[in-house]
Image (tube, rainbow, N blue to C red):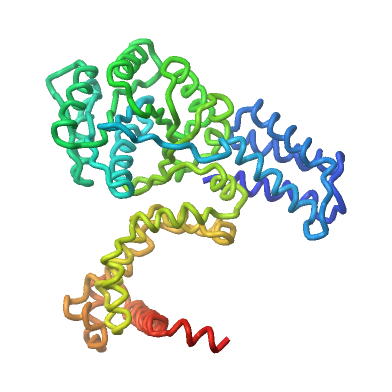
Length: 438
């Protein structure tokens, strides 16, 4: 995500390197390159021009303090304006009411149904909500079944009326059911079309008028670039939605939709989908996205994802085992599972400041743990709990069973033992003694 734009912007700022101050001449060359980079990233031309004009106005005449170089000052100005371009502050997401009702809208193939499941999963875990998913797509074959499969994976009920072709009645009946069952959140998945049409607009508008949603979201595939912005404008003119959801931001997207949509539609981006997993969803933070575009990482989003997977009781149990030097391969497998739930590995690593640039040319596959998992799964339950008993003959069997080499098994066992010792040592350190040593 945004890799090409990040690289182009970085090259643009190099034009100012070695300059003593920002002048109209040297800033013009930099911003010409910035504007070209934005347009190549599929940012709306008018948005790109207004953006660079604003940056130029703020940059010229700035006194470069001794601690900063002109290029560093320009990065700060561009960062601030990128943040403002995408909305400035993180937009609130309203889920009040009994029940709160969220209406999903968008074209077919934008990822509405999948995102409905992701949102239900996120709000169930993070906000302790009791969601009810509603199947109001009465046209697409298997739409109801798709929603039911997603709901089953996250343990959330689905309301559907397979014989009905009236989405307004289905949505109203679902809200009544939610009140009876004690569901405090209703997420209504609606039908999409291959293009904007009058029938679609009338239907989604009728549903909104009937159910009075707390939030109406427009879901858009970020990989469609400027088409996404144009479609969002058409929907907003008719539906007046509350916010935008950008899906597939982990794909080969140039990022133009994220940078243009707020200016063109004047509605905030509220959520982003960052992968196929049901946990791959983040609230949209303009400042964090600006950080990532400029290769600075996004540590707040990284911590948010970690906290979503954090279980206090499990953490206490794990800490106790580490303190007793009993951390084993079963615990190791559980930690791998938690990391994988956090999302795409390269996307995750790019959130850590300083790491994004270092790994931009590396191919980090989501299957990176596959070899390690295969080795561990080839161990017997007793071997996983007691790694110290794994001798030469056992290593040979494990290698054959996992389709790896003895050298790979040896490497994992050595690294695991070193990690276990380091974790045990850290867990037994007395913080007060450490401070006295200083």
